[in-house]
Image (cartoon, rainbow, N blue to C red; front, side):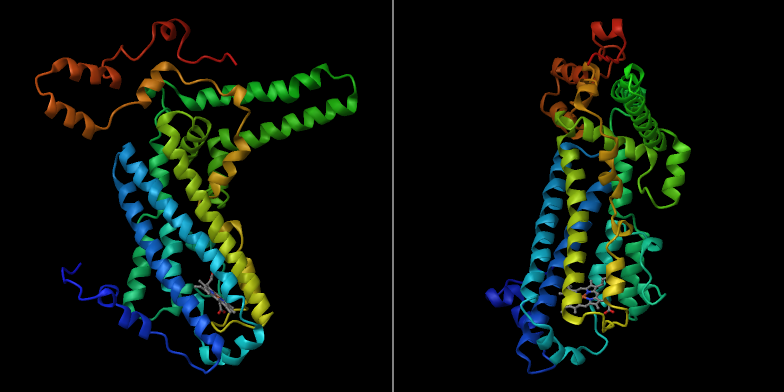
Length: 404
Ligand code: HEM
């Protein structure tokens, strides 16, 4: 960061260097658009990386209070809006015809978007797994980079915790997952799923006279049991994870499900927005890949790419779930059950969810040093005393109410 006072608009924005960096290899009019489009992409990639790095830094904190989650929501939303712009930007380049492109394409020599360092950094920092990538001419993409600085940046982006890893750790800490939290979501969820399956398929089958309909209900019942079994049986879950069909740990997945089902609870509003934005980012990158591949087919058909790949064929293979970092969040919907079966949060759990941040507590303590009753009030909200979190009613009936 320099403290130099800029002498003008152009000086402040470094426009001399920026605008002079456009150098055409031909006199073909459309090459100007081709270069500007790529440069604009790279500038926006730089901004995206800046945002993702800052979000990763915030996630690294061992505890996230609501002021921090709001910051994450704002920044991820910004990334989403930039990506929307990047998806749309392809339309502008498509005003160039294949014939115009062919006129200057030889001038590109072996240059290709495949060599975009920032694009690879973005993928790695999000959490694209190395062994999920489509091999490019049977080679690792890192081979196209030969300057030590780029290689060091790429290695660091692979080695440092990706957004996926950090989100996973955060989800594993979702309040409500343990009995200690006074809720024990996982046990409750398994019980209500069973009840929903019985009501939807088993009981209708048992009371049905028509053999075909009975069979059909039973088939649905077993299918649904099997689907949920892959979630409830940790071993099955983990073997799917090893095969790359799931990305998040079992505990993190439970956290994501809890947040999705209870998103109307104030404490889960922002976490739910975060999960939605992460899916938006994945969706928009997939849309970009799709629009890019359509443009490539339109421009070069099945010709090989300037970077040496099979071109269209290679790119088409990259539009798959392999590149979806937050795949599990999309799959959450498989396990969503009707609202009527989702038991309400216990009062104790609600109180736990409304805890103040440690920072807030310290500030209040400083401001009201001698007012011990205020501190006790806060202590009360935090349920710091062993017993005071539980309602009399809850004590009688147990923490979980299944009335639907
Ligand atoms: C006429 C326009 C374009 C054509 C014909 C084109 C063609 C290609 C081809 C054939 C590839 C595969 C690698 C290769 O063999 O070269 C590729 C990859 C790539 N291109 Fe483009 N491209 C165009 C525009 C753009 C633009 C505007 C961007 C924006 C930055 C871009 C970014 C990329 C990236 C990031 C890859 C690597 C994708 C991956 O490996 O998953 N391309 N492009």
